[in-house]
Length: 92
Image 1 (cartoon, rainbow, N blue to C red):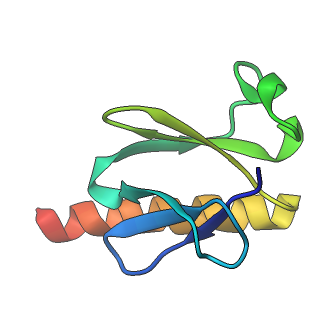
Image 2: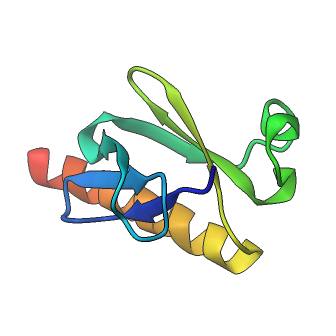
């Protein structure tokens, strides 16, 4: 199933089960994000496209995201890291 990521505001990252953003699948709070990384050795082999899979680790679980291209993956990772870091900077 294909998912779509959306940053609605600076505090959450929503992901949807469809491209039309109708079926909300879940929300990741930036304050819960501990790490964003490319994990090509451990779990990417389970992905439909391992070379475009990256991980978002939170307090509770690890989310595996698959981007449509290498450029999109880098942008998504940068945006998520920036959002998580921005949140913690404002909390200090």
